[in-house]
Image 1 (tube, rainbow, N blue to C red):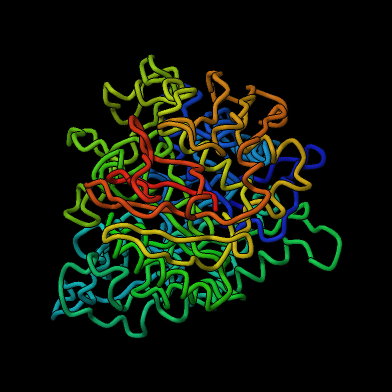
Image 2: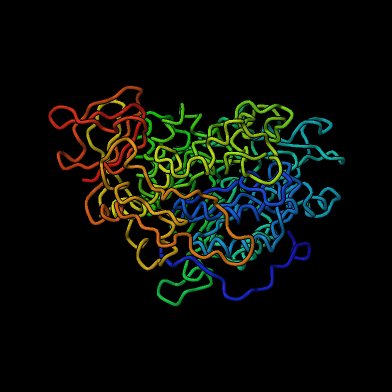
Length: 636
């Protein structure tokens, strides 16, 4: 990571485009995660790359995302899918070059999308020049080298286990051991060393100067270890992450590192009382991938002088159960509200089984998505969840590349199943992923789940996401906020109200954003049916957000892209946005449930997540029937 070992930033090509300025944009942002290797392949080698990702960015804009989070694309031996970085300032040749990263940032900004990069501060690759020097005896204090236990030093220095399985220590030729909380190819850095802190500050400035809008900090809870590296005292330690105190995670010392990063990010953000800064008027943000044993501990990462957001793994882990969901929602809102930060909500990512499988099926996944999108705060979407993709659980052992699979039962060894390249078209050798094959085999049914197959189908998962994100953007009771008002509901059902006083859906998002921001609501030339977001209709009326055009999802191969919207409108959502509250009702049971009509006789169905039946047939005395495993939004 030393400057002299890296590629210089591309020469400036004139003023950089930037998304419209909106203070606090991250408080209700919809952030779409791109796992670069599995998103889109432009050069035909079967591995996704930056050029492919750039060409597919219009899909994100049309979907209604506010930002794209890119997983690591830096120079790497790829021992852990790019999370083993050998140079944070260079692009891995398999994924492109620095000019491709520059072009992607520019294109995203032209589409009104902000760009968040994944940074890996806890460890480097074992091929990193620093670690290679350490093996030769130079600069070992940048890492954690220790003598072994036992008379001959043949036992690890302590009982710590790798998250990927096996011991967290590897012995080198001179008999000493080095710490790696993940794979042996990922030695942990020593963040008590000033050179480590200075180097990562320099890395952040490098990418901020390139125009990125923020960073997701991988293992943000792991850089500081307990003094003396004490034993844990028992086995299967990976299963305790986020549930119990551990001497190698969530130590108080990490917070001073986060404060340093926040000061750096603020230096690139505009002064609210002054002219726009380097960010073109946009705040630069930091997001913590942090596991903590309680919501209160997690909230420490988002205090006003630390990072802006932290991933809510407690919500991600929550089962599809009304009581459990309510408990996690309350705890999350209470903890983040106490420090003035927004809550975040996530159902899937590149490290867990996709929620369409994990929660029991696509019906539960549709309902869970609407529930999540109704909550106050920011939302993270993982590529392919908008298509309802299931986990690919039957990959042959010979094609799996997850190091956890090959080292034991760390992280269950099943992460490859959620990383299978996503489908764009009905046909083709890789269903539009690229001109060649794909690095992990795709199921035969992938074509029917593709963007092309689902676009324009009012009952598809994709059109449900488009309609929900358009309505979330337009309605003043949705988006940002700090709380929900729980309403009486039958067992197994959640019901809560959100009001314009709490929400932030239309405040600042629709105004002053021009065609680019409005275009993202339904996007890419599609016109959302005015009845889609506003009328009760039948099983699909509340879900249509397409103009019938096929979503190719591609940007031009070169040059600028322009706006994604082409004058797109969301008439029904805009009409609903003029006032009133929204009630969200989620039935987590496998049976239909009768309850009073949300909002009384004047309650009006905005959006329903289930298909193939009347979403809420009228019952006697002003009641409605809520379908099994469903979620709906009602205008009050």
